[in-house]
Image (tube, rainbow, N blue to C red; front, side, top):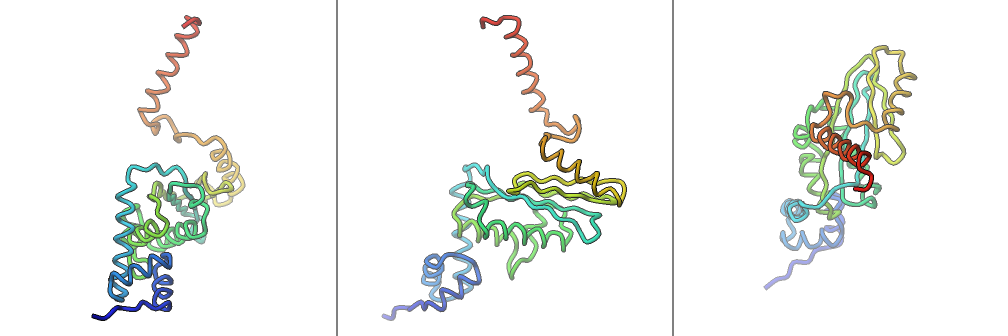
Length: 222
């Protein structure tokens, strides 16, 4: 009976291919009997398993990035959430979001589902997301992908990449005005552009709050 020896070089090679940790790569290669393709599949399955086990976790942290095309007539915004601020600020996480947005822009993707199906380093973006989940061990999900077109698109990214705004202005010379508006939007963080875009649940909740405040004013002892 022979025992397969997994060399450090092979482990490092798989790590370079997937970005997974050294021990995870060694274990995957052992389970795959040294077959790199099978080892990659094992790592991806691990990411899918982590995602399934953490499906009920909240993802309140993350990273948002926005970019324009060369002539600033089209803007793209992408947000990926995670569970902890530590991960949301990590170089691996932020560079992944940045790379995915570049892929989405170059392929003119319209939706998150289209983005997930796009090729990335020999697999799909969706597969790479599973790799990230398996590597980091946190739930992650794309929560925003927006595109706007205008004679001039201006982007404002607040430090920390938690709040990002895009504004389309009607003149190609409107960059300064657009920047002022974009910064104001980021500062106020409105729930919608106009009343027709406000979620009915938010309106209902605010009405109930207003009613309760009115009742307390009429009966201060309650």
